[in-house]
Image (cartoon, rainbow, N blue to C red):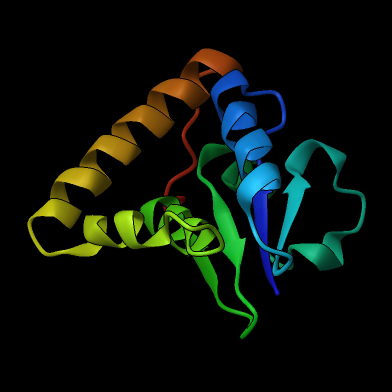
Amino acid sequence: MDTLFYDGQCPLCMKEIRLLRRIGDDHLRLIDVHGLQDSEVWPGIPHEHLLQRLHLLDDEGIYRTGLQATVQTWRHTPFGFLFRLMLIPGIRTLAEGAYNRWAERRYCRRYGCAIVPGSH
């Protein structure tokens, strides 16, 4: 089962989460970072990193972040094939750049601009 860690205080993120809950399959667990109590759920990943970018822990124990986490998450819906298009070379470069710019701006507006080095 894949586990997606999301920012439950982000209005846009919550719109996406509500949609995923409606159309996603039973193999995706959704966890609000703000509700995490047990550090074993996210071993070695600082709370700030989880808030800066989407993080997905796949069923093999591998973390995916940002665009890769988004694509993997949407594979649990009927629209996964559309999101996989973002991984095509060229498109991926543009999509990752757009995601990273959006994520940094969102984090700065919400929590201040102390982007943690190496978090993307």
